[in-house]
Length: 586
Image (cartoon, rainbow, N blue to C red):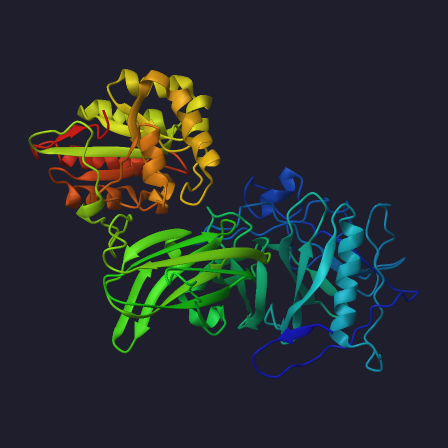
Protein backbone atom coordinates (compact mmCIF):
# COMPACT_ATOMS: atom_id res chain seq x y z
CA UNK A 1 0.00 0.00 0.00
CA UNK A 2 1.23 3.49 -0.81
CA UNK A 3 1.52 6.08 1.94
CA UNK A 4 0.06 9.54 1.27
CA UNK A 5 1.36 12.59 3.10
CA UNK A 6 -0.70 15.66 3.81
CA UNK A 7 -1.19 18.26 6.53
CA UNK A 8 -4.72 18.38 7.90
CA UNK A 9 -7.48 15.89 7.29
CA UNK A 10 -7.13 13.09 4.76
CA UNK A 11 -10.09 12.70 2.41
CA UNK A 12 -9.95 9.61 0.18
CA UNK A 13 -11.57 9.52 -3.21
CA UNK A 14 -13.22 6.30 -4.30
CA UNK A 15 -11.93 5.21 -7.68
CA UNK A 16 -11.28 1.79 -9.17
CA UNK A 17 -8.56 0.69 -11.54
CA UNK A 18 -10.21 -2.34 -13.11
CA UNK A 19 -11.24 -2.62 -16.76
CA UNK A 20 -14.89 -1.80 -17.18
CA UNK A 21 -16.80 -1.66 -20.47
CA UNK A 22 -18.80 1.35 -21.58
CA UNK A 23 -16.40 4.06 -20.39
CA UNK A 24 -12.92 4.43 -21.79
CA UNK A 25 -10.23 6.70 -20.38
CA UNK A 26 -7.15 7.64 -22.34
CA UNK A 27 -3.99 9.72 -21.99
CA UNK A 28 -4.17 12.62 -24.45
CA UNK A 29 -2.37 15.96 -24.58
CA UNK A 30 -4.55 19.04 -24.64
CA UNK A 31 -4.82 21.77 -27.26
CA UNK A 32 -3.15 25.12 -26.74
CA UNK A 33 -4.69 28.36 -27.92
CA UNK A 34 -3.11 31.40 -29.48
CA UNK A 35 0.00 31.87 -31.55
CA UNK A 36 2.85 29.68 -30.26
CA UNK A 37 6.23 31.15 -29.43
CA UNK A 38 9.30 28.91 -29.20
CA UNK A 39 10.50 28.39 -25.64
CA UNK A 40 7.22 29.40 -23.97
CA UNK A 41 4.47 27.22 -22.56
CA UNK A 42 2.32 27.78 -25.64
CA UNK A 43 5.30 27.55 -27.95
CA UNK A 44 6.14 23.99 -27.02
CA UNK A 45 3.54 22.87 -29.56
CA UNK A 46 5.65 24.44 -32.29
CA UNK A 47 8.56 22.30 -31.19
CA UNK A 48 6.53 19.11 -31.46
CA UNK A 49 5.27 19.08 -27.86
CA UNK A 50 1.70 20.11 -27.07
CA UNK A 51 1.28 22.63 -24.27
CA UNK A 52 -1.26 22.36 -21.48
CA UNK A 53 -4.65 24.01 -21.46
CA UNK A 54 -6.64 24.26 -18.29
CA UNK A 55 -10.01 23.34 -19.72
CA UNK A 56 -10.75 21.89 -23.13
CA UNK A 57 -9.49 18.35 -23.87
CA UNK A 58 -8.85 17.29 -27.42
CA UNK A 59 -7.89 14.14 -29.29
CA UNK A 60 -4.35 14.49 -30.66
CA UNK A 61 -1.34 12.34 -31.42
CA UNK A 62 0.09 10.11 -28.72
CA UNK A 63 2.80 11.46 -26.38
CA UNK A 64 6.44 11.12 -27.22
CA UNK A 65 8.41 8.26 -25.74
CA UNK A 66 10.60 10.57 -23.67
CA UNK A 67 8.89 11.77 -20.49
CA UNK A 68 8.02 15.47 -20.33
CA UNK A 69 9.79 17.49 -17.72
CA UNK A 70 9.58 20.68 -15.74
CA UNK A 71 12.89 22.44 -15.19
CA UNK A 72 14.18 23.57 -11.83
CA UNK A 73 14.30 27.33 -11.43
CA UNK A 74 16.04 29.40 -8.80
CA UNK A 75 19.40 29.51 -7.09
CA UNK A 76 20.15 25.79 -7.26
CA UNK A 77 20.03 24.79 -10.96
CA UNK A 78 20.52 21.08 -10.30
CA UNK A 79 17.84 19.80 -12.66
CA UNK A 80 18.48 20.23 -16.40
CA UNK A 81 15.94 22.21 -18.38
CA UNK A 82 13.71 20.22 -20.71
CA UNK A 83 10.50 20.50 -22.65
CA UNK A 84 7.15 19.90 -21.00
CA UNK A 85 3.99 18.16 -22.05
CA UNK A 86 0.64 17.77 -20.35
CA UNK A 87 -1.37 14.56 -20.54
CA UNK A 88 -4.87 13.81 -19.37
CA UNK A 89 -6.83 10.87 -18.13
CA UNK A 90 -10.12 11.77 -19.78
CA UNK A 91 -13.20 9.65 -20.70
CA UNK A 92 -13.88 8.84 -24.35
CA UNK A 93 -16.81 7.05 -25.94
CA UNK A 94 -18.79 7.26 -29.16
CA UNK A 95 -20.24 10.70 -28.34
CA UNK A 96 -18.91 13.74 -26.57
CA UNK A 97 -20.60 16.47 -24.62
CA UNK A 98 -17.35 18.32 -23.87
CA UNK A 99 -17.77 17.80 -20.12
CA UNK A 100 -16.06 14.47 -19.73
CA UNK A 101 -19.22 12.35 -19.96
CA UNK A 102 -18.27 11.11 -23.38
CA UNK A 103 -15.86 11.84 -26.24
CA UNK A 104 -15.45 11.37 -29.93
CA UNK A 105 -14.27 8.07 -31.32
CA UNK A 106 -10.49 8.03 -31.13
CA UNK A 107 -9.05 8.47 -34.62
CA UNK A 108 -5.42 7.82 -33.63
CA UNK A 109 -4.69 4.08 -33.31
CA UNK A 110 -1.67 4.93 -31.10
CA UNK A 111 -3.78 6.81 -28.55
CA UNK A 112 -3.62 5.41 -25.04
CA UNK A 113 -6.86 4.00 -23.66
CA UNK A 114 -6.45 2.73 -20.09
CA UNK A 115 -9.93 2.08 -18.70
CA UNK A 116 -11.00 3.61 -15.42
CA UNK A 117 -14.22 2.67 -13.66
CA UNK A 118 -16.51 5.27 -12.06
CA UNK A 119 -16.03 5.93 -8.36
CA UNK A 120 -17.23 3.04 -6.23
CA UNK A 121 -17.23 3.37 -2.48
CA UNK A 122 -17.64 -0.38 -2.06
CA UNK A 123 -14.37 -1.29 -3.72
CA UNK A 124 -12.19 -3.64 -1.68
CA UNK A 125 -8.88 -2.42 -3.11
CA UNK A 126 -7.36 0.52 -1.18
CA UNK A 127 -8.07 3.75 -2.99
CA UNK A 128 -4.43 4.87 -3.25
CA UNK A 129 -3.46 1.54 -4.79
CA UNK A 130 -6.17 1.87 -7.42
CA UNK A 131 -4.95 5.33 -8.38
CA UNK A 132 -1.33 4.15 -8.51
CA UNK A 133 -2.26 1.16 -10.68
CA UNK A 134 -4.19 3.38 -13.10
CA UNK A 135 -1.32 5.85 -13.44
CA UNK A 136 1.24 3.10 -13.84
CA UNK A 137 -0.84 1.50 -16.60
CA UNK A 138 -1.30 4.85 -18.35
CA UNK A 139 2.44 5.57 -18.28
CA UNK A 140 3.31 2.10 -19.53
CA UNK A 141 0.99 2.44 -22.53
CA UNK A 142 1.87 6.08 -23.22
CA UNK A 143 5.64 5.51 -23.01
CA UNK A 144 6.21 1.93 -24.19
CA UNK A 145 9.94 2.47 -24.51
CA UNK A 146 10.32 3.51 -20.87
CA UNK A 147 10.24 1.30 -17.76
CA UNK A 148 8.44 3.25 -15.03
CA UNK A 149 8.04 1.74 -11.56
CA UNK A 150 5.65 3.15 -8.98
CA UNK A 151 7.22 4.18 -5.66
CA UNK A 152 5.56 4.35 -2.21
CA UNK A 153 6.08 8.10 -1.69
CA UNK A 154 2.92 10.06 -2.57
CA UNK A 155 0.73 12.90 -1.34
CA UNK A 156 -2.97 13.84 -1.30
CA UNK A 157 -4.22 17.44 -1.40
CA UNK A 158 -5.82 20.19 -3.46
CA UNK A 159 -3.55 21.29 -6.31
CA UNK A 160 -5.90 23.57 -8.27
CA UNK A 161 -7.94 25.28 -5.54
CA UNK A 162 -11.22 23.62 -6.49
CA UNK A 163 -11.86 22.10 -3.07
CA UNK A 164 -11.28 18.57 -4.36
CA UNK A 165 -8.27 16.50 -3.41
CA UNK A 166 -5.73 15.59 -6.06
CA UNK A 167 -2.75 13.25 -6.02
CA UNK A 168 1.02 13.48 -6.49
CA UNK A 169 2.79 10.19 -7.17
CA UNK A 170 6.48 9.25 -7.41
CA UNK A 171 7.77 7.03 -10.19
CA UNK A 172 11.27 5.99 -11.22
CA UNK A 173 12.26 5.50 -14.84
CA UNK A 174 14.37 2.33 -14.75
CA UNK A 175 14.81 1.91 -18.50
CA UNK A 176 17.83 -0.36 -19.17
CA UNK A 177 20.83 1.57 -20.39
CA UNK A 178 19.80 4.80 -18.65
CA UNK A 179 20.44 5.93 -15.07
CA UNK A 180 17.43 5.56 -12.75
CA UNK A 181 15.58 8.88 -12.77
CA UNK A 182 12.88 10.04 -10.35
CA UNK A 183 9.73 11.82 -11.54
CA UNK A 184 6.69 13.38 -9.90
CA UNK A 185 3.29 12.67 -11.48
CA UNK A 186 0.57 15.17 -10.46
CA UNK A 187 -2.93 13.75 -11.05
CA UNK A 188 -5.69 16.37 -10.89
CA UNK A 189 -9.31 15.36 -10.23
CA UNK A 190 -11.47 16.77 -13.05
CA UNK A 191 -14.68 15.05 -12.00
CA UNK A 192 -15.05 11.41 -12.87
CA UNK A 193 -11.43 11.07 -13.92
CA UNK A 194 -7.92 12.28 -13.21
CA UNK A 195 -5.91 14.45 -15.58
CA UNK A 196 -2.16 13.86 -15.52
CA UNK A 197 -0.18 17.12 -15.58
CA UNK A 198 3.41 17.49 -16.73
CA UNK A 199 5.78 14.91 -15.36
CA UNK A 200 8.36 16.67 -13.17
CA UNK A 201 11.94 15.40 -13.17
CA UNK A 202 13.67 15.20 -9.78
CA UNK A 203 17.04 14.00 -11.04
CA UNK A 204 19.14 10.89 -11.56
CA UNK A 205 19.73 8.48 -8.71
CA UNK A 206 17.95 10.62 -6.14
CA UNK A 207 16.30 9.23 -3.01
CA UNK A 208 12.89 10.78 -2.35
CA UNK A 209 12.20 11.09 1.37
CA UNK A 210 8.77 12.75 1.60
CA UNK A 211 6.15 14.43 -0.61
CA UNK A 212 3.63 16.92 0.78
CA UNK A 213 0.96 19.28 -0.60
CA UNK A 214 0.60 22.63 1.13
CA UNK A 215 -1.57 25.52 -0.07
CA UNK A 216 -1.70 24.14 -3.59
CA UNK A 217 2.07 23.69 -3.89
CA UNK A 218 4.08 20.47 -3.72
CA UNK A 219 7.01 20.14 -1.32
CA UNK A 220 9.52 17.36 -1.92
CA UNK A 221 12.37 16.35 0.37
CA UNK A 222 15.02 14.24 -1.33
CA UNK A 223 18.65 13.22 -1.07
CA UNK A 224 20.92 14.16 -3.98
CA UNK A 225 24.26 15.84 -4.66
CA UNK A 226 25.64 19.10 -6.06
CA UNK A 227 25.65 19.53 -9.86
CA UNK A 228 29.39 18.80 -10.16
CA UNK A 229 29.48 15.59 -8.11
CA UNK A 230 29.21 12.05 -9.41
CA UNK A 231 25.73 10.55 -9.43
CA UNK A 232 27.01 7.60 -7.40
CA UNK A 233 27.20 9.96 -4.39
CA UNK A 234 24.59 11.34 -2.01
CA UNK A 235 25.94 14.40 -0.19
CA UNK A 236 22.98 16.61 0.68
CA UNK A 237 19.26 16.78 1.44
CA UNK A 238 17.37 19.17 -0.81
CA UNK A 239 13.86 20.52 -0.25
CA UNK A 240 12.07 21.53 -3.46
CA UNK A 241 8.95 23.64 -3.81
CA UNK A 242 6.86 22.87 -6.91
CA UNK A 243 4.36 25.51 -7.99
CA UNK A 244 1.64 24.25 -10.32
CA UNK A 245 0.99 26.76 -13.11
CA UNK A 246 -1.57 27.01 -15.90
CA UNK A 247 1.03 26.67 -18.66
CA UNK A 248 3.98 25.10 -16.86
CA UNK A 249 5.18 24.17 -13.42
CA UNK A 250 8.18 25.67 -11.62
CA UNK A 251 10.66 24.06 -9.21
CA UNK A 252 12.69 25.99 -6.67
CA UNK A 253 15.24 24.66 -4.18
CA UNK A 254 14.19 26.23 -0.87
CA UNK A 255 16.65 24.46 1.42
CA UNK A 256 19.89 22.52 0.97
CA UNK A 257 21.53 20.69 3.88
CA UNK A 258 24.89 18.88 3.57
CA UNK A 259 24.23 15.39 4.90
CA UNK A 260 27.44 15.18 6.92
CA UNK A 261 26.81 18.49 8.69
CA UNK A 262 23.41 17.47 10.05
CA UNK A 263 23.60 14.72 12.70
CA UNK A 264 19.94 13.79 12.24
CA UNK A 265 20.67 12.89 8.60
CA UNK A 266 23.43 10.47 9.54
CA UNK A 267 23.19 6.87 10.60
CA UNK A 268 25.79 6.71 13.34
CA UNK A 269 26.71 3.64 15.29
CA UNK A 270 28.33 3.78 18.76
CA UNK A 271 32.08 4.49 18.74
CA UNK A 272 34.34 1.45 18.59
CA UNK A 273 37.66 1.58 20.47
CA UNK A 274 40.57 1.12 18.08
CA UNK A 275 42.55 -1.98 19.08
CA UNK A 276 46.25 -1.36 18.74
CA UNK A 277 48.67 -4.18 18.13
CA UNK A 278 51.50 -5.26 20.42
CA UNK A 279 53.76 -2.41 19.35
CA UNK A 280 51.12 -0.01 20.65
CA UNK A 281 51.33 2.08 17.50
CA UNK A 282 49.23 0.52 14.74
CA UNK A 283 45.60 -0.61 14.45
CA UNK A 284 43.63 -1.87 11.45
CA UNK A 285 39.87 -2.28 11.11
CA UNK A 286 37.76 -3.63 8.25
CA UNK A 287 34.00 -3.37 7.78
CA UNK A 288 31.18 -2.69 5.36
CA UNK A 289 29.46 0.70 5.25
CA UNK A 290 26.25 1.96 3.66
CA UNK A 291 24.90 5.32 2.53
CA UNK A 292 24.90 8.06 5.22
CA UNK A 293 26.46 5.68 7.73
CA UNK A 294 29.17 6.87 10.11
CA UNK A 295 31.58 4.42 11.73
CA UNK A 296 33.54 6.21 14.48
CA UNK A 297 36.63 4.69 16.09
CA UNK A 298 37.99 5.92 19.42
CA UNK A 299 41.68 6.73 19.60
CA UNK A 300 43.07 7.80 22.99
CA UNK A 301 46.09 10.01 22.34
CA UNK A 302 47.99 12.81 24.03
CA UNK A 303 48.76 16.33 22.94
CA UNK A 304 51.77 16.32 20.63
CA UNK A 305 51.24 12.75 19.43
CA UNK A 306 51.26 12.22 15.67
CA UNK A 307 48.17 10.41 14.39
CA UNK A 308 48.24 9.03 10.84
CA UNK A 309 45.20 7.37 9.25
CA UNK A 310 44.85 5.67 5.86
CA UNK A 311 41.48 4.60 4.45
CA UNK A 312 41.37 1.98 1.70
CA UNK A 313 37.94 2.49 0.11
CA UNK A 314 36.34 3.78 -3.11
CA UNK A 315 35.99 7.52 -3.62
CA UNK A 316 32.86 8.63 -1.82
CA UNK A 317 33.95 7.10 1.49
CA UNK A 318 35.86 9.67 3.52
CA UNK A 319 37.59 10.25 6.83
CA UNK A 320 36.71 12.63 9.62
CA UNK A 321 38.82 13.32 12.72
CA UNK A 322 37.46 15.32 15.63
CA UNK A 323 37.66 15.73 19.39
CA UNK A 324 34.46 16.34 21.37
CA UNK A 325 35.17 16.46 25.08
CA UNK A 326 33.82 18.94 27.61
CA UNK A 327 34.66 22.34 26.15
CA UNK A 328 36.96 20.95 23.46
CA UNK A 329 35.36 20.70 20.00
CA UNK A 330 38.16 20.39 17.48
CA UNK A 331 37.67 19.27 13.89
CA UNK A 332 41.03 18.11 12.63
CA UNK A 333 39.84 16.69 9.31
CA UNK A 334 36.32 17.61 8.12
CA UNK A 335 34.31 15.31 5.88
CA UNK A 336 34.06 18.12 3.33
CA UNK A 337 37.80 17.78 2.70
CA UNK A 338 37.11 14.33 1.22
CA UNK A 339 40.33 12.91 2.62
CA UNK A 340 41.30 9.26 2.73
CA UNK A 341 44.70 9.88 4.31
CA UNK A 342 45.99 12.35 6.85
CA UNK A 343 48.75 12.81 9.41
CA UNK A 344 48.56 15.45 12.12
CA UNK A 345 50.25 16.39 15.37
CA UNK A 346 47.39 16.52 17.86
CA UNK A 347 46.70 19.98 19.30
CA UNK A 348 45.03 18.44 22.37
CA UNK A 349 44.81 15.13 24.16
CA UNK A 350 41.70 13.03 24.71
CA UNK A 351 39.46 10.47 23.05
CA UNK A 352 39.65 11.39 19.38
CA UNK A 353 36.97 10.13 16.99
CA UNK A 354 38.32 9.01 13.64
CA UNK A 355 35.21 8.21 11.61
CA UNK A 356 34.60 6.54 8.27
CA UNK A 357 31.69 8.26 6.51
CA UNK A 358 29.99 7.10 3.32
CA UNK A 359 28.33 9.14 0.59
CA UNK A 360 28.06 6.19 -1.78
CA UNK A 361 24.59 5.02 -2.75
CA UNK A 362 25.67 1.37 -2.72
CA UNK A 363 27.23 -0.35 0.34
CA UNK A 364 30.97 -0.95 0.11
CA UNK A 365 33.85 -2.51 2.05
CA UNK A 366 36.69 -0.52 3.58
CA UNK A 367 39.89 -0.98 5.56
CA UNK A 368 41.11 1.68 7.99
CA UNK A 369 44.66 1.82 9.34
CA UNK A 370 45.51 4.13 12.26
CA UNK A 371 48.95 4.81 13.70
CA UNK A 372 49.75 6.87 16.79
CA UNK A 373 53.34 7.98 17.35
CA UNK A 374 54.42 9.57 20.65
CA UNK A 375 56.72 12.62 20.53
CA UNK A 376 60.13 11.66 19.20
CA UNK A 377 58.92 8.73 17.10
CA UNK A 378 56.77 10.83 14.81
CA UNK A 379 59.22 13.61 14.04
CA UNK A 380 59.96 12.36 10.52
CA UNK A 381 56.32 12.05 9.49
CA UNK A 382 54.58 14.67 7.36
CA UNK A 383 52.07 16.49 9.54
CA UNK A 384 49.85 19.53 9.22
CA UNK A 385 47.93 21.79 11.56
CA UNK A 386 44.24 22.76 11.56
CA UNK A 387 44.76 25.38 8.84
CA UNK A 388 46.60 23.05 6.50
CA UNK A 389 49.96 24.63 7.32
CA UNK A 390 52.79 22.14 7.47
CA UNK A 391 55.34 22.52 10.25
CA UNK A 392 58.80 23.71 9.27
CA UNK A 393 60.44 20.57 10.62
CA UNK A 394 59.27 18.60 7.59
CA UNK A 395 59.69 21.21 4.87
CA UNK A 396 62.36 20.10 2.45
CA UNK A 397 64.86 22.80 1.50
CA UNK A 398 65.63 23.18 -2.21
CA UNK A 399 68.26 20.90 -3.65
CA UNK A 400 70.26 23.97 -4.60
CA UNK A 401 70.03 26.46 -1.70
CA UNK A 402 69.12 30.04 -2.57
CA UNK A 403 70.01 33.28 -0.91
CA UNK A 404 67.58 36.13 -0.61
CA UNK A 405 63.79 36.30 -0.55
CA UNK A 406 62.86 33.25 -2.63
CA UNK A 407 59.47 31.50 -2.65
CA UNK A 408 59.08 28.07 -4.22
CA UNK A 409 55.99 27.16 -6.25
CA UNK A 410 55.29 23.47 -6.79
CA UNK A 411 52.60 21.68 -8.77
CA UNK A 412 51.42 18.08 -8.33
CA UNK A 413 49.39 15.50 -10.27
CA UNK A 414 50.06 16.65 -13.84
CA UNK A 415 50.69 17.01 -16.60
CA UNK A 416 47.13 17.78 -17.67
CA UNK A 417 46.35 18.57 -21.33
CA UNK A 418 44.23 21.61 -20.39
CA UNK A 419 45.43 23.02 -17.10
CA UNK A 420 49.20 22.50 -17.24
CA UNK A 421 49.59 24.71 -20.36
CA UNK A 422 47.41 27.35 -18.66
CA UNK A 423 49.61 27.25 -15.56
CA UNK A 424 52.70 27.57 -17.74
CA UNK A 425 51.18 30.61 -19.45
CA UNK A 426 50.55 32.29 -16.08
CA UNK A 427 54.07 31.54 -14.84
CA UNK A 428 55.54 32.95 -18.05
CA UNK A 429 53.40 36.07 -17.74
CA UNK A 430 54.85 36.81 -14.29
CA UNK A 431 58.39 35.54 -14.88
CA UNK A 432 58.07 32.81 -12.23
CA UNK A 433 59.69 29.38 -12.14
CA UNK A 434 58.32 26.26 -10.47
CA UNK A 435 58.82 22.55 -9.95
CA UNK A 436 56.27 20.12 -11.41
CA UNK A 437 55.93 16.79 -9.61
CA UNK A 438 54.52 14.66 -12.40
CA UNK A 439 52.68 11.36 -12.44
CA UNK A 440 54.66 8.95 -14.61
CA UNK A 441 51.95 7.58 -16.85
CA UNK A 442 50.65 11.11 -17.53
CA UNK A 443 54.13 12.33 -18.43
CA UNK A 444 54.34 9.40 -20.84
CA UNK A 445 50.92 10.30 -22.32
CA UNK A 446 51.73 14.01 -22.78
CA UNK A 447 55.43 14.16 -23.75
CA UNK A 448 55.16 17.55 -25.50
CA UNK A 449 53.72 19.21 -22.39
CA UNK A 450 56.42 17.55 -20.29
CA UNK A 451 59.09 18.89 -22.62
CA UNK A 452 57.52 22.36 -22.59
CA UNK A 453 57.79 22.46 -18.79
CA UNK A 454 61.53 21.91 -18.99
CA UNK A 455 62.00 24.14 -22.06
CA UNK A 456 60.46 27.14 -20.25
CA UNK A 457 62.90 26.89 -17.35
CA UNK A 458 60.88 24.88 -14.87
CA UNK A 459 61.96 21.56 -13.37
CA UNK A 460 60.41 18.09 -13.25
CA UNK A 461 60.34 15.65 -10.36
CA UNK A 462 58.89 12.24 -9.51
CA UNK A 463 55.35 11.85 -8.13
CA UNK A 464 55.11 8.05 -8.66
CA UNK A 465 53.78 6.22 -11.69
CA UNK A 466 50.04 6.13 -10.89
CA UNK A 467 49.58 8.31 -7.75
CA UNK A 468 49.09 5.35 -5.42
CA UNK A 469 50.48 5.52 -1.91
CA UNK A 470 54.04 4.23 -1.60
CA UNK A 471 54.00 3.95 2.19
CA UNK A 472 53.11 0.29 2.56
CA UNK A 473 53.98 -1.29 -0.77
CA UNK A 474 56.57 -3.97 -1.38
CA UNK A 475 60.07 -3.07 -2.52
CA UNK A 476 59.34 -4.44 -5.99
CA UNK A 477 56.20 -2.30 -6.33
CA UNK A 478 58.05 0.78 -5.08
CA UNK A 479 60.92 0.26 -7.51
CA UNK A 480 58.53 -0.29 -10.41
CA UNK A 481 56.49 2.87 -9.70
CA UNK A 482 59.44 5.18 -9.06
CA UNK A 483 61.75 3.60 -11.65
CA UNK A 484 59.28 3.77 -14.55
CA UNK A 485 58.66 7.45 -13.84
CA UNK A 486 62.39 8.18 -13.80
CA UNK A 487 62.76 6.37 -17.12
CA UNK A 488 60.01 8.49 -18.72
CA UNK A 489 61.56 11.74 -17.46
CA UNK A 490 65.06 10.66 -18.45
CA UNK A 491 67.59 13.52 -18.40
CA UNK A 492 64.81 16.03 -17.49
CA UNK A 493 64.38 14.48 -14.03
CA UNK A 494 65.71 16.23 -10.94
CA UNK A 495 66.82 14.25 -7.83
CA UNK A 496 63.50 14.76 -5.97
CA UNK A 497 60.43 12.69 -5.23
CA UNK A 498 57.20 13.77 -3.59
CA UNK A 499 55.33 10.62 -2.50
CA UNK A 500 51.60 10.82 -3.26
CA UNK A 501 49.75 12.38 -0.29
CA UNK A 502 53.23 12.63 1.24
CA UNK A 503 52.38 9.24 2.67
CA UNK A 504 55.75 8.13 4.06
CA UNK A 505 56.27 4.62 5.36
CA UNK A 506 59.10 2.93 7.21
CA UNK A 507 61.28 2.44 4.12
CA UNK A 508 60.13 5.29 1.85
CA UNK A 509 63.05 7.57 2.61
CA UNK A 510 65.67 4.82 2.36
CA UNK A 511 64.33 3.32 -0.88
CA UNK A 512 64.04 6.77 -2.43
CA UNK A 513 67.66 7.51 -1.53
CA UNK A 514 68.73 4.29 -3.22
CA UNK A 515 67.14 5.68 -6.42
CA UNK A 516 69.15 8.86 -5.89
CA UNK A 517 66.07 10.84 -4.81
CA UNK A 518 65.36 12.93 -1.75
CA UNK A 519 61.89 13.59 -0.37
CA UNK A 520 60.48 17.01 -1.22
CA UNK A 521 57.53 18.27 0.76
CA UNK A 522 55.99 21.73 1.21
CA UNK A 523 55.22 24.28 3.89
CA UNK A 524 51.70 25.30 2.88
CA UNK A 525 48.91 24.44 0.49
CA UNK A 526 45.79 26.52 -0.18
CA UNK A 527 44.02 23.15 -0.56
CA UNK A 528 43.04 23.84 -4.13
CA UNK A 529 42.09 20.16 -4.53
CA UNK A 530 38.87 21.05 -2.66
CA UNK A 531 38.05 23.48 -5.49
CA UNK A 532 37.69 26.72 -3.51
CA UNK A 533 37.15 29.94 -5.45
CA UNK A 534 40.01 31.59 -7.31
CA UNK A 535 39.98 34.55 -4.92
CA UNK A 536 40.23 32.18 -1.93
CA UNK A 537 43.24 30.43 -3.45
CA UNK A 538 44.88 33.79 -4.20
CA UNK A 539 44.28 35.10 -0.68
CA UNK A 540 45.74 31.97 0.89
CA UNK A 541 48.87 32.10 -1.26
CA UNK A 542 49.46 35.78 -0.54
CA UNK A 543 48.88 35.33 3.20
CA UNK A 544 51.57 32.59 3.36
CA UNK A 545 54.01 34.15 0.91
CA UNK A 546 57.35 34.60 2.63
CA UNK A 547 61.00 33.80 1.96
CA UNK A 548 61.68 30.07 2.05
CA UNK A 549 58.01 29.03 1.79
CA UNK A 550 57.20 26.04 -0.43
CA UNK A 551 53.66 26.30 -1.82
CA UNK A 552 51.81 23.20 -3.00
CA UNK A 553 49.32 23.61 -5.87
CA UNK A 554 47.86 21.20 -8.42
CA UNK A 555 47.83 21.30 -12.21
CA UNK A 556 46.12 17.92 -12.55
CA UNK A 557 43.85 15.50 -10.75
CA UNK A 558 40.62 17.44 -11.40
CA UNK A 559 39.20 20.73 -12.58
CA UNK A 560 41.99 23.22 -11.90
CA UNK A 561 40.48 26.32 -13.53
CA UNK A 562 40.22 28.01 -10.12
CA UNK A 563 43.87 27.21 -9.43
CA UNK A 564 44.93 28.83 -12.70
CA UNK A 565 42.97 32.01 -12.00
CA UNK A 566 43.98 32.10 -8.34
CA UNK A 567 47.66 31.71 -9.22
CA UNK A 568 47.43 34.59 -11.68
CA UNK A 569 45.74 36.81 -9.10
CA UNK A 570 48.28 35.94 -6.40
CA UNK A 571 51.33 36.57 -8.57
CA UNK A 572 49.85 39.89 -9.68
CA UNK A 573 49.45 40.97 -6.05
CA UNK A 574 52.96 39.75 -5.16
CA UNK A 575 54.64 41.55 -8.06
CA UNK A 576 56.00 44.30 -5.79
CA UNK A 577 56.71 42.07 -2.78
CA UNK A 578 60.41 41.63 -3.57
CA UNK A 579 60.01 37.84 -3.70
CA UNK A 580 61.58 35.72 -6.42
CA UNK A 581 59.88 32.54 -7.59
CA UNK A 582 62.24 29.66 -8.27
CA UNK A 583 62.07 25.90 -8.69
CA UNK A 584 62.38 23.85 -5.52
CA UNK A 585 64.23 20.95 -7.18
CA UNK A 586 67.08 21.64 -9.59
